[in-house]
Length: 357
Image (cartoon, rainbow, N blue to C red; front, side):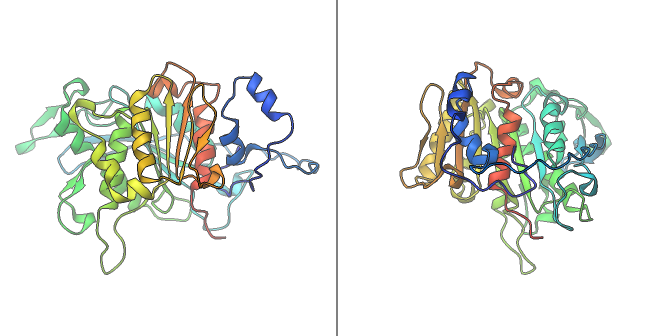
């Protein structure tokens, strides 16, 4: 599997002989993308395998207490990547590891997406997973006069969802007067220092269900900050993964964010969907309109398809992988044939900008 923190394997457009049949019989019809992501073996005889190194032990999750500009006490969990010096695949000195902001679905918590967080952590990513307002341990907001207000997930309305993805107010981002849940996590990452610390250089956002809609909205807000004389303020998201994105959760449409220029044309986006995820297919069809020559898709029961002028799927910036299951959202992440975590890791290994040695 391609490591998202290291360059993907050089791609051959010819599949290894016999692998198509074996994987088709096993039900793994996502062969094409997996090969392109770096799974395929070399066409030449393999060299003797190196002596395996002991895998680095991932650090235990760290619980953080942050606060949004509207007073929500945000509980956040940080899964630091294993130490590069102890890893079997060390990176160049000073090379930043990918950092993932993982946004759960309505009704979920950081715990409901923790299996994915741990898989990405083992793959060499830093992962930050907040309990969104009204969920898990993030159920208190400081109101006027210091009075505390209880928040409940089932009572959240459109305005509350907009506040989760808020990043606006003023011209200087770090002084913005509306910084919601995801932006507060971003502020925490901005303040980290050290070559092995989580940061913004190779930032990925992954959202599930309504969390995917919120991740898209925040990515659009991130890209909308104008540059200052001292440098850029936005466009920090380098890849976006949407698992069963919701089209209009609680009245909050995803369409305006999909029309934002950076989201529409530039940020590499993977859409993961079950066979019943009609909203996810609708989202991907919208992405295809903005990237008519940069899409690749594998829909349930159909052969892989790609843009007419796309030379190879690895060059696609909009990818749809539909899994043959009725599950969606966080339940989709529990699938094992194929494993969504492996698909996400392969995608990130293929599209993330590679660090300089």
